[in-house]
Image 1: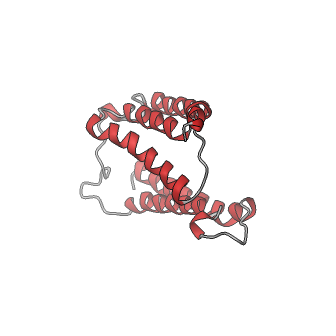
Image 2: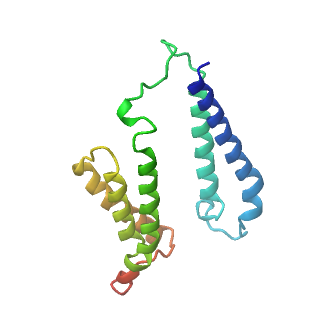
Image 3: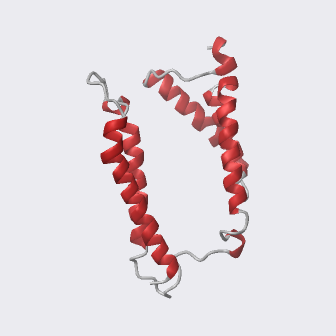
Length: 167
């Protein structure tokens, strides 16, 4: 087994172990679940457990792909040298962090939906070449659809910032 495959196996296994530890040890003690919850999907522990389940599944897939026999014995996906780990990866991670901090400070001013639109656009710009015909409608419609779901269906108040008086 090549070092890259071994590292993928270790990473996948570690993600599964950490997700399971959080789901079965930490979450039951950290998240208070009231008895009178109308819907399981609205319970405080539901979505964290769904996200942990998806993380564990992703870890299992990462670990499992190392077990698949590769025809040439190399990596499953050839790596383009322009996108290798050393070519601006740290700068992109820092840019994502700056975008999330900006989102945090923008929410009280513009509200969650508008701040999410800006964050989506910013993150899409970090990609190699965004297709604006797809990126712009997605960046606008996805946060608005989530806002409408949470305010109208789930009856969860979402901060609107300066737009609070309009709605």
